[in-house]
Image 1: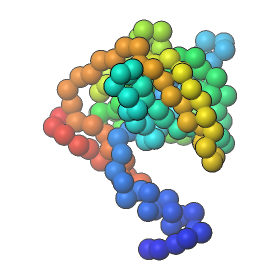
Image 2: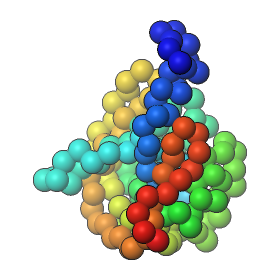
Image 3: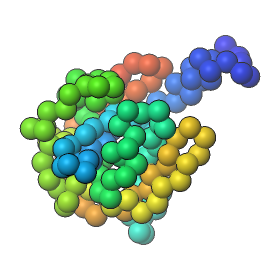
Image 4: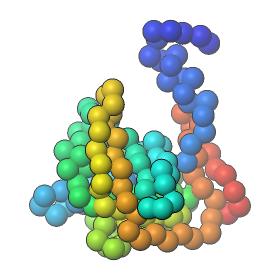
Length: 159
């Protein structure tokens, strides 16, 4: 499949790159927790500990995440596929009972890895907002990681 202007062909080409699956969590101005599934997550720096993720500018959750001073990044295990699918849906209700406070940020209970972050930079590129966060605290557990490849969930590592 080749293409120079076809968005579907472009997405298919990008889908050939397997990524981990994470959920970003943040509180809105009223204190309610929101969550969004992402696969645009990367480490930026070890010293200081910086990560980044990308937020689509047409997301209905844009305002909450674009304005959040603190957020959590929750790397999902294979046992959390249902959470990934739920948080990927626009308008999906989020169960506050799935989260707990971790160093000032809401994070998912039981995630494979959890990072509590403070937003340090925001910059628009194309149709996405790139959000950089300083990792204030983190933890991790053993387990197989949830992957996304060519539109399907998969796994990596031992469970």
